[in-house]
Amino acid sequence: MVDYNPFMDEIIEGDAHPIYKQMRAESPVHYIEEFDAWFLFKFDDIWRSGANFKQLSAAEGTTPGHLLLQDTPPSLSFTQMDPPKHSHYRAAVSSHFKPGAVKKLIEEKIRAHAKEFVDGFIERGEADLVADYALRISVRSASLVGGLPIEEADTMSGWVNELFERRKGHRGMTEEGQQAGKDMFFFFLDYVKKMRKNQDKATGLLHTMLVGEIEGKQMSDFEVASTLSLALVGGTDTFPKALGSTFIRLCQNPDQRAEVAADLSLCQDAFLEALRIDTPTQMLGRTVVADIEYRGHTAKPGQKVMFVFPSGDRDEDEFERPDVYDIKRRPQRIVAFGQGVHMCMGKHVAILEAKIALEEILKRIPNYEVIEDQCERTKTEFVQGPVRLPIRFDPA
Image (cartoon, rainbow, N blue to C red; front, side):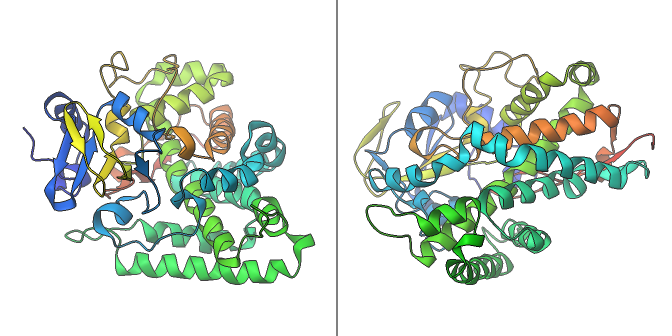
């Protein structure tokens, strides 16, 4: 049996999927004493746990930094709340994340940005589809939905990148990442204070949080700033990696790419299948508050339970030929967006911006070539995926 640890080099530096496959077969519910934590590798265990807020609590955090290393400060956002309090906060802001609202708010503007970015590199015959394209789209989407200052897009992207930088031999967030998190939070705190005095100029999620009430009270400046930080990180970290993986998978499967290019209605399918097979978030988790059984094991109060999403999304008991990229798969469910009350609120934002981004590339550069030996990916215990994706193509 593999001596699994989420920080082992084979997970962070290499291809984790052979290890995840072995864990599903040999130790699908795996305990690590060092962290007093259980790791779930099977789809069904992860799926039902995501909806179980009675035995599993988010109050102590959900990330590896919160639960395994305790190197991440607590957040005042509703992600670290349980129902019913969580439900009140989520309901207050959820209108911004519904499909119709997302489409109305970002579709026209994000398509214009996508076209602008392609215009900027199409004559060169080369580009980086993460740095030049996916990341720039994602930070603008997050700004539109969140009401964030778009003129600070590059600064905000820099903070997020710094949060997820890792140093070999060092577990978890670096000192530079911790400082970036502080800089981001206090920037938003100052911005919230400024906009509270000018509420008529606030937009999106920020406007709703400033003018609305939850249980008869306004959200504090600290709560609003924490939620804006969450909106930025959630909207700009995993999406570029998932979209980058989509471009890679389509390049590796030219027949499927040609099919999508000929029928752009398949762009959503192409993205969601890449999200399944290359799920960027390695894990999130909860703290046990009441005994819970997993395949003959009992997780006790105070212990942690971690959901290994990429393993679940390639579970042989859930997906036929799980290691094969197939744009026609269209599974009824995947765990990449989470499940239950804490399901990713930005799901519909990600799907729409991916659809637009793929359409604008495939309409104009359908036969791009990924320069694989120059690609780079982030190497962390938390999020993985391409951060540098050079391509070449025939210039316009």
